[in-house]
Image 1 (cartoon, rainbow over the protein chains, first blue to last red):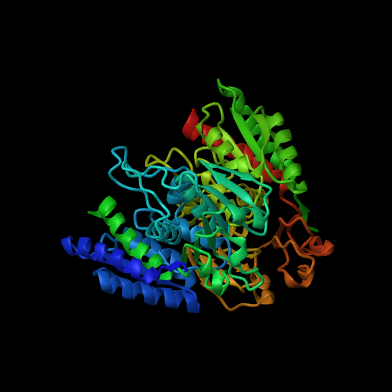
Image 2 (image 1 turned 60 degrees about the vertical axis):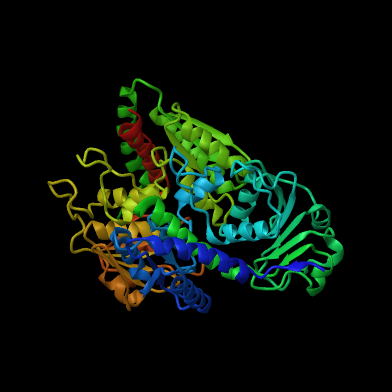
Length: 297
Length: 297
């Protein structure tokens, strides 16, 4: 039977580490959330962010502003030295205009790592913002949460040098290639040494050592090779990953809000991580601290 | 009867000016176009770019690369000192991934003004990249083309100081609020002093003096006040703007590939500009020269 990892347990450890660091700061660490759309998941995420901030000692302020006033409100928060982190709850316009908002958040306060400054660094595998390699680049919360959970599952072998290629020789399958999670995650795992088969409606792609290519492989072939299977398909049309498809002992992780594995997957998997949510919030808190240390300390 | 302006005539004047400046340069000015999608309009636009470059003495090189190799190809062109301008023919992925590509083009070579660096400057009405105000910021080709055509129509009163508020007191209606044309154009016209009513499927908005707000006004009311009517609706569902809707003498401009005005509009309009295309290409050439002067000379 698979070991089931509750992301809440791992998140607790990370929150504890963040709380210890925050307690040492001499100024109050402040995160501002912007809610501009009447959207239940965004409100829920804002509630979780507030609870997480309360837990670790970060001041959290939710600003509810009309979407047409959001750009000016972000400008103001960018310019305010008392604000160290900014989080925007998407979707807002649900058009290309959201991309403008993402890039409007100053990258030094963008705790979600969505600004093109951070996205470019991610896809170019640039891990530090300074030549002295003392300041780590920011990674987006959910992909980072997935990697930390895989690490907790024992799937990564950290090299002594710190950043080695802890997934060298491992094969990963990801069902999801969104710009928010699936594509950056595939790239990050490939940067860590894995061969990553990325599936979405446009067909499979192989991410390997900074290269991406179209790759003819079926779902069955890819799953039969996978050491790690990651799902994030928000559709009931997706055929659930079933026991006979995966390798015995594989690490299985789902970040979709829907179930993407059959309930019996734990009979075959080595580790099963059924959700990610609490770890995403923990990574947002950790990123807030990191940006403070990098730019505002 | 309205004066009908052929954008090809105005474009010719601009191309002539660019050609005169290019002739003075001591190094060959080089623009690279990237075509990654099998898309007829993109191929056509590439052909027009090449013809325009040939006309003004800019070297044009079209690079056809697989879309998965595009990011690396852009990195290479960004780093190549012999390449002064980069143009990417969209859509490529037709997903949020295109936003990543737009921001990947170095803003100093981004002749289309699509990088978030330029977009932020536009929406903040920052017109120069240097404190000495010697280097003008780049504006996106089609919105800039529209403004130059309105100027040719006599709709702008340039102040002696250069950048004044040449549309002060004028009312503009725009049907289109895309991130590529309608929204930046509305903002640019408002920065020039106009009251701009922007219509799209999400309802009307008023752009005025750097502020945007939802505004309850009907199409009929807005059109009856408009000194300038601009259309860019790529749908046959759009009810054509007809003669009784507009003010006699209004300046009417269409940038859609479809007709958005009734053929008789010239009976009532003061000036009619039926299309923009050749001016968009001329502005791309002008932007190539401007970036060279600002960053590579």
